[in-house]
Image (cartoon, rainbow, N blue to C red; front, side, top):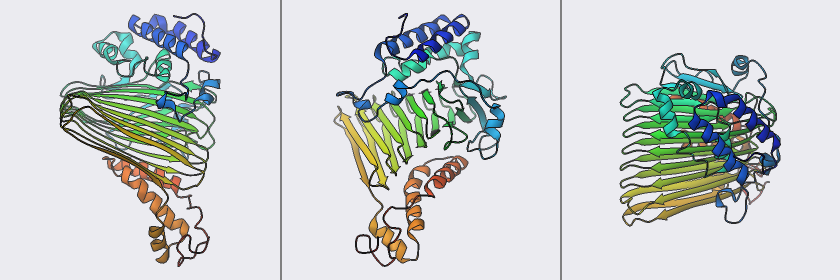
Length: 465
C-alpha cells in the first residue's frame, strides 16, 4: 500500500489512516486487506473525470467533491430527537408495526431491530464475532461492487467500518419488511454507508432505503458515498425502494449492484430529489435462467440541481425479462442525466427487454441528457428502447383551462399525473402514499412558465402570455 497519497485529498488520507489505526486490530485479516487494496486503488486513480472516452461520467462533473474538504462527521444533536423532532420528513418509525427499523445517523447505527436476530442487523458484529454470518459477509462484500470498477466504490470500501446487513436464510418463510434510513447532519463531512443484502432461496424482502436530512432546504453541505450490494437467491423476490432526499447543498454518489439467480424477481423504485449533485449507478446481473427485474425511477430537479442515473442490465442467461422505465421532471436551471444500457449476451436467447426514459421540462433553462442503448449478441430476442423530452402538452392544458381551471392548478395536476405513473408501481400501499405525498408537496409550488397570464379561451402561442 502506498505510504503517501498521490492525490490532493489530505483530509481523506488523514481519516483513512485514523480508521485503519482504530479498526485494524478488531477486524479480520480479509477485511483489512480489502480496505488496503481499496485505498490503493483510489489513491492511484483519483476521482473520475469527464474526459473523452469516459462515458459513465461524460455529463457529470465531480470537481466540487474532488476539491472539497470533507472530514469525518462529529455527532451533533441527539440522534433520536433529530429523527423524531417536529416537522421531520423521515419515515423513521416505519410504515406498519411489522416493519423493522434500522437507522444510521452520521454513519453510526442509532436504531437497530430488537427482533429477528441474525436476519437484520449491522455488519461489524458479524465479522468481529467470526460467525457463519461473517463468512457470508466475506463471500459477498466487495464481490458485486468491486473496487476496480469505480473510484467511489473504492473510496467507500476503504472507509468500510460498519453498515446494514440483511441475510435471509434459504426458505425463510416470513416476508421481511425493513425501513433503512441513513441520515447525515454534520456540515462539511463525508460518510460512507454500506449495505449488504443476501436473500436466500425462495425468500421475500421489501426494503425502503432512504438517504435524507431532516431539513433538506437549509441543511449544510456534506458528501454521502453509498454502496449497496444485493444478492437475490433462486426463486427469491425483493422489492427495493430507494429515496434520495438530502440537503440541497449536499453531494451524493450511490452505487447499487444486484446479482440475480434462477427464477428470481427484483423490482426497484429509485426516487431522487433535493440534492446539489445526486448520482445513482444501478447495475443488475440476471445470472440465472428465467430471472426477472423491473427498474422504475422518478427524479425531480430544480434550481441548479444535478441528478444522474446510470442504469445497466446484463442478461447472461436465457428466458430473462427486464423492464426499465424512468421519468424526470426538470425546472429552473437544473440538469438531469440518464444513461441506460441493456446487454444481451450470446447465450441469452428468448430475452425480453424494454427500456424507456421520459422527461418533462418545465423551464427553458433546464437540460436533460438521455442515452438509452441496447447491446444485443443473441438472435432470438424481443428488445426495444426509447427516450423523450418535452413540455406539457398544450392541447391538454388548453382543454383543462377551458373547463375553468387556472394555469397553476392545471399544470400541477398534469405534473402530478406524469409522476404518478412511476409512484403507482410501488406495491406497498403506505410506502406509495408516503412517496406520493412527498413528491406532491414538491411539485405543488410549481407553475408552468409562460401560461400565468393566458386567457382560458386562448391557446398558448395564440394570445395571452
